[in-house]
Length: 522
Ligand SMILES: *Cc1c(COP(=O)(O)O)cnc(C)c1O
Image (cartoon, rainbow, N blue to C red; front, side, top):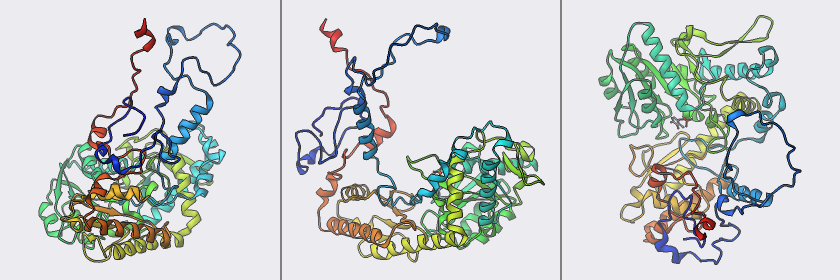
């Protein structure tokens, strides 16, 4: 427990207090230069002021009845208090700029500064989406060029840049699929999703009005074609497949699956979140997908995970091009760009205000153009190499979930922890003390106590070796009977174990002032 009582504003309490004796206590609650402080609301002193401005001259209030009547309730603070508070908070936030971020399925790669510089160029950053089209030709040019790159890399015919993230892209793709079925007078009900899929796949299908059928995979972590074929029928609208899948494995039967899906008149949806493993090497259109979302914030290095908004463009094969939602950028004969607001007769309609996440488009295009086609090819190869390097070295102490080489991420189960009293969660918490952000845990659901590690191509061999050495050492300590150390972890983090379920279910997001002490004294 920290020295400062912070009963207000906490989402959950430390549950590792029992082992507090293992942590050196300090009088202040600070740990080295990691500073503890009350909430900013608790730091305020009535009447303290950060600026010295002349009184506002009397003026007629033109807000009518909408003018604020009482105080807004913000704390009264001096400027250094405000600056220090927010800088300290920012320093508690781990990010890809701080170090390796091995979250599987998330492709947390380094975001090159060049992309940031381009996105901040005033010609892009200061545009308003309601400006006349003749004044935003450069921005439309970026969107047109990005569209062209993404269509070429995927072999697809049409694209919409609008969706705000991968999950939104899934919804866009499924809405297009539904529109295509409806246009044929064929209202189908079911969508088939393998049980290793990301949770957004079934969620998007349900949101789009479908019932979801989950099909189990094979012992080697892939879709069982026979099971899938048995589940197919004339009421199936779509099959959603992630390739490489969330076990980090390439679905070798993807062409046979595509044929079976098309045979019953269904569409084949590709979850392209793992595109980083194959970009520049495989065109998803040639695998038989009718549409696929691309996470610009994963494969194409735009920041995410607290660092910025996502962006989930969807590419469409010829089979679905007629229902692709807009807005779409068209090139006129004179080379200028125009905006086709509702193409395809508006079967799907508009998915997002304006054009989508413009800042992400400029970042992604800057990334693609700075790497070039050959650079993207090298990046996907290096991503796969890095994952396999980890897989081989970590297998010395940890248990891979499946045999054989992986694609861009490597998956372990918790069988190497059998009988140690250490769980996947304990193991991940101990990684924090060693200075590593944990990997993805307990996903995919098909693997017991799953640990999914995706190093990406942007980590050096030294960085990978440091991670491996830390994980091997932890695995050996677990096997050597040091369960208590794991249960007490993290010991050096600003907060220790939180009740994560309570924090997720009942977050306390509102600060309520304590009973006014002055009023109570009267
Ligand atoms: C990240 C991810 C998604 C969802 O993408 P968001 O951009 O987070 O909405 C879907 N499928 C897989 C496999 C993913 O890794």
